Amino acid sequence: MSKWGFNDGDDPEEWLGYCEANGMDYNEIEFPLVELVRRYLLPKIEQDVTVVEIETCHNPIRALTVDGVDMRGVWKGRAPEPSLTPDQVTIPMVEVARLALELHGRAGAAR
Image 1 (cartoon, rainbow, N blue to C red):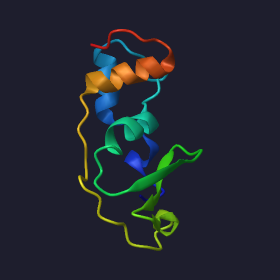
Image 2 (image 1 turned 180 degrees about the vertical axis):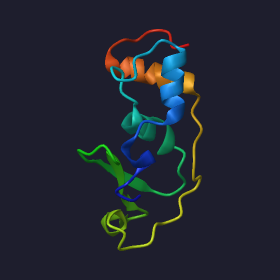
Image 3 (image 1 turned 180 degrees about the horizontal axis):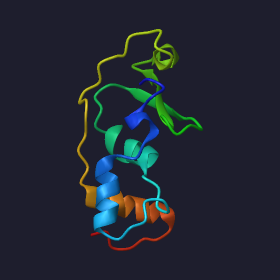
């Protein structure tokens, strides 16, 4: 929820390692954070969450509302974060790679 977001804007170490192990250039193929949130996280969250995309590396997709409550105060640390359930979703790295390649226009077999 905060402006620092997912991993403070850095690609996850698991992604970098997966790319290196599978011959993918992670400087060329972007980690698909926004699409992962839209396709995998939002459908699992029990609360009603609306999101907005923002041009920033730290947290390019943010909760705008949770159960109708505006979250912009949370972004700046002026309001408490709501509890979301579940608090995490696990996506196999092969699926992350498949999605990244699809979005990059290189739909191919992720290993």
